[in-house]
Image (cartoon, rainbow, N blue to C red; front, side, top):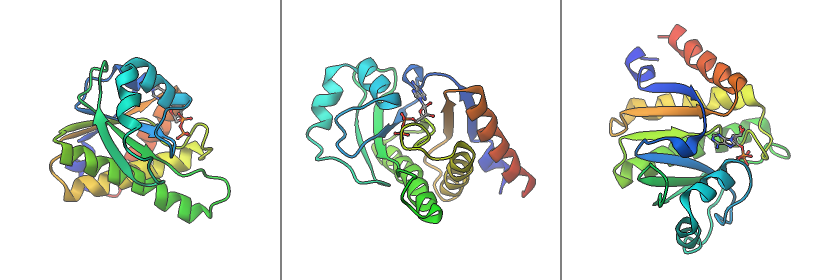
Length: 179
Ligand code: ADP
């Protein structure tokens, strides 16, 4: 992997609702009507306008993404994607759907006009994806998407624990070794 691509990817530990990038990604559920985890945090911080806009969208399928405004959040847009529920899927299928969530969220953000995007660790909470596996899929699918799309200048992985941050950094370093 080209080092210049990896240099457009950054890992931080923190709360994604505080990120002042162009677009933050929400790990939503299929209803898009709000839920627990990062979804609940984003809806609480954005205010009721976000739920009203989401209610017009008719839900979202796993692996797909839809864009709304960001209301009271510092970002300009929220990109809602639905990751896969790990249990019950073949691991390869789960990987493909998780990768699709990252790639489609990135494309939707770019089409809205975003240059910088922040991601949470999609599917690693209630949806039960093993954290290390999810981090490798996240980093590889974003790196590949950035290779062919120069609209997005910077992607930030906002990790909610030191362990999640370590796993994302390790996945980036593993790709750097291949460059
Ligand atoms: P999913 O249903 O896709 O698994 P969750 O919200 O349950 O989504 O969890 C996804 C990840 O988001 C988890 O690793 C969780 O620790 C993390 N998370 C929860 N709240 C926040 C937040 N405010 N900012 C960033 N990450 C968060």
